[in-house]
Length: 322
Image (cartoon, rainbow, N blue to C red; front, side, top):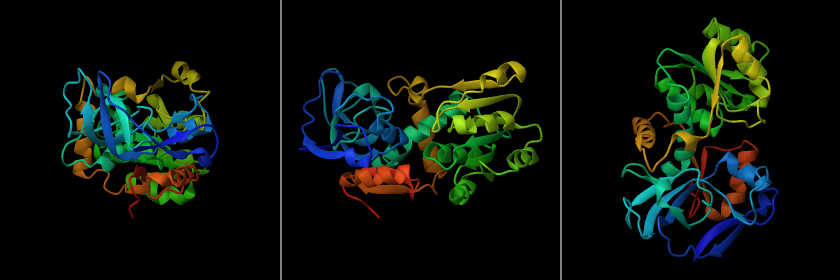
């Protein structure tokens, strides 16, 4: 029998219940995936708390990887025994699940299921920021708000590898060292000389701000970017920003944003995943460790994520690993 993690009511991590179930046979266009690893993301905690009004009961999670056990009628390009991962497909918290074949990303032999579950959602969101929403060029100066988070830590390292000068910002002084590991400069969001430090790196302001925080950092983001620069809004951990609009008319600053599925479609284009896998092979993210939790330890994973006490990118597996 498969195990699933289901919520029957909104609330704290205690509402996460490990139950048994039967995934069943895949219908047309879908596959049965045995999941070796499941990613844990901030959006999971938001759904658990009811911030999106997710219909209940619900199996949370949006990212996983494993081995295809069976394919439904009409499925092409995937076969039993092949490995695949996915991102942003609800229902990931399960040891087995049925999922649309169009959502799957074939995994190369040298990319483990744990790597896929840790990096697909975060890495492809970062790809959207540095390739789709803004084509990052060598020599540009970028500021990353929320650089200590999952997406921010991946984006910072990738941008630096592409030749950008990266200023990473965190709201936690305890995480300044982590931010510095992936950026050229590390700043605390409440540093009284925040803009002074930014101007030392980029006299007229940075070329691009990647804002993963939103409302709490919107004003600083606007003041840090140069006239004619760009703010790439790909997250709103503190709520949606409220004062970006005036920048486009008064200073010529472009504001762009979007969701990863708008720009990455595994059924039609494998280019983005291929770039991510190449960066992983190159070692761009080698210092970002994976924090392993057993399937029954999902509550601990959520608690660590919410309390900002994670030791790495969180992944659920059949059993915990050190």
